[in-house]
Image (tube, rainbow, N blue to C red; front, side, top):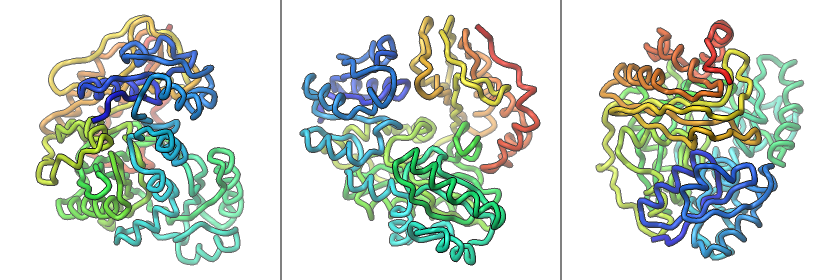
Length: 458
């Protein structure tokens, strides 16, 4: 087992990882920028090390500073959380070269599955269905025009590297395609240092389904699926498990395909394999893999009782998978919503500030993952995620009712948050009926966002 873990991240995921490590008797080291010196993860860790000024590139993305902090504190492992360096293959390799355990897959696995084109090829080789499109990187716009003969319109142009919805364009006709292709390449180059692109047919009214897997480099299991179809600008805002859109047959095929792919690439740790599900055709297609713990991992933990972060730490410490597939039983329904420091009535404008008062919801089946406390000042330098509210109920209807109750209990005074959005969504007939798809929320926001009543102001 690991002895001392450095957590190379901030915010609620750093708090989550530190708590899991401490539960296992592992000493913890927090790293922090100057802007985060008073953050909760710094306060609860056994040790803390300042690694640079507020800008992420000079702190949380500063590999040399993080590796020095690990050496200075005697850490033997590094957990990257999500974001920042979590899917950086070079950082994984650098940790190994420094004699540190990287809590996650190998650099080679990250390279294979982090490059979307290589991941598509790996999925195809493992017999996992992929969305029709280019099987490799598109060399130039002339090759892209030829691929259009197979995909037709609408078509999605996507960055081969990176994620987060950047470097993506949808074209509905040839004129849009001719304009979008160079735009996507330029954005991908600026965001990821890699302007490579590939193409996929757009599955209209698709659902976003993802499978949670655990692997030890030799074997792999799944922990069932999550549905993440409620998205804004390709960013998830509401996640739930299991997906009620799937039949038992499709669910089994989907999850088994994820296990095949994880085994094929020798995956180690917690990861997520993402798919699009075509309601009309009753078919699923692989789109990408996230080689890290996901923001929405708690919904899987709520229905399975498996501590995914702890299992990842055990695997990194050299233990083989403790769990067999038969041990992973899904019970009830869980929903997670992301409470961000944003004003949804004003196009989700950022709203950093100081938390003047905080009331955390409680009761059966309620989990509040956060780094907040009364008096905490939310810095403007990072993403706007404040907390994740996760609920569990015997049925989906019971989970939605519990979500509404917990949202009404929640108070984050001094900020505007996305809480009003979720209260409105929970009351929407389409959401109640689970009649949604990946584009549904953006259409809903066009007519509903301006009517949302903002949270308490400063």
